[in-house]
Image (cartoon, rainbow, N blue to C red; front, side, top):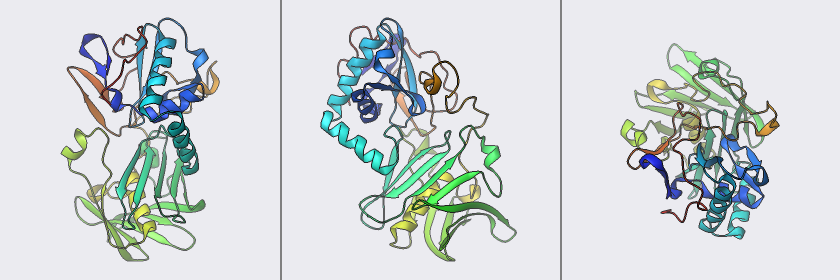
Length: 331
């Protein structure tokens, strides 16, 4: 683990080492919201270094020798990720998936014998869901303008772009006097509807036929999870596309008495959400904390990670990176 003053620490096993290693091998250091900075631009002497958590969040630490610390941790990340060849291969797979490595990937068993994988950043307003080991099964992807608030997305036609197999789809939210709020995903050929079933669960229909039951996780399952578990999905067909759409709704919408509530955006407006302003150009925000709200980890006596929206800046716990950083880990 990486030790710090005042009893705080960050466990190496809690980091997204593969993403950090892949950027490091390209001569970059990964920061918040996927931004990168040239290693050569990290100063010698006191400075800040972002660390990427397995949830995709960025935590910024202050060290005595920033450049030395970053290079030592980069080498450690490559080693613990299986070496340069493994890291490079992971980078290629991520490019093929269309999802950067820093985004947390959460998977669940699908009805087809493979996995359904979900990658979402609610603040950046993006979601990608796809089926593993099933060539030809379409991926469902959502994009929105980063910086939008949750309130701005609670409309009949939320300002979101959705594609299925790369082709445009339409996501709408309808208010029915009989069925209550219903979320609808429509392509040229198919329509899926998510309607509330009871307080905790919702039913997914395709063409009016039930294809999956989505149930919210209990509070205790989420509160202390290192990575927030996916919504529980019970499949009622063997079609992997139905499974992908079910997990898409599970990641993007609420279920039960929160059915069709869009779970994206921020509570308050985010200034410069893409980090495009300032003298650093696109790298502005690289050294800012970036919470993803996808989980938390216990951090020992008084430290560790918290992945909520109230993370403050300024370098955290005064980490001592002057000795060449890290010295191994428990991950």
